[in-house]
Amino acid sequence: MQRKILVTGSTGKVGTSLSQALQKSGGQPHVLGVRSLNCATQEGSVERRRFDWDDRTTWSSALDGIQAIYLIKPPHDEPAPAIRELLASASRLERIVMMSEIHCQAQNDTEPQRAAEVAVERSGHSFCILRPNWFFQNYTTGSYAPKIRQQSILETASASQPVSYIDVRDVAAVAAFELLNDDARSHHLLLTGGEALTSRDLANIIGAAAGRPISVSEVPLDDIRTRVLARGGSEAMADFIVGLSRNIAEGRNAIVTDTVERLTGRKPISFSTFASQNAQYFNH
Image (cartoon, rainbow, N blue to C red; front, side, top):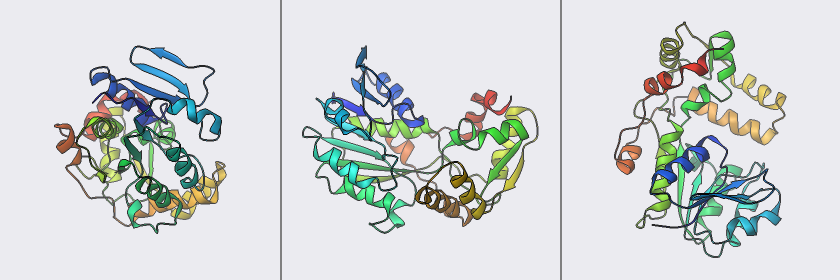
């Protein structure tokens, strides 16, 4: 379907891959919402418009003519109010695909991250909420990458608990399907890779790609909280990150679903393939 799509968070990991996926889908026209942009630009089927969660004057022009939106949560301790306001102003919207996270449904509806989901669920629009497991890309361009490159150490909340990590390209492929599918219904999707791996498994795979041994270091949850706060994160953000890490430490992230293969028609990218493709990120 030729809906005009707004991609928020367009410079992020999933947003970048989603734009690529949409371009491969017959040049699907879409708009990239960019925070730091002086004026709108157009290149082929891809338009760039300024969109800033913290500047409501950018919302109307970003939403002009938009029929579907890929929505990331605003970087607020309480993201739900801004989401409600944005969606209420999107009169032509037919479809919302929102990025959430694994186990969000276990939270109380008033907790910040779950409340953001509720804002979408009660918006009156057709929606799909994506709940992916942890991304492969955390180990190449995310917070775990520097220690791997500089000290050959992979830090984790648990060395022995398996996690069904997923590639952002697979998340983006599902997001594109849900944005374009005429028959899409309102639902939630748990997204995982095709296998559950422990941090020791990851270290062995990364080590093979990097050509050197990678050791594993467990980080206590209290230390994870301290690090988030030291980087300038809020108490709410620290609670959020610690909660995600606790799920790993307590073995809740091992579930493997068939969602990626069922919706895209191909198996999820394996971590071994990902590591081989990105070996340069594991070295100086």
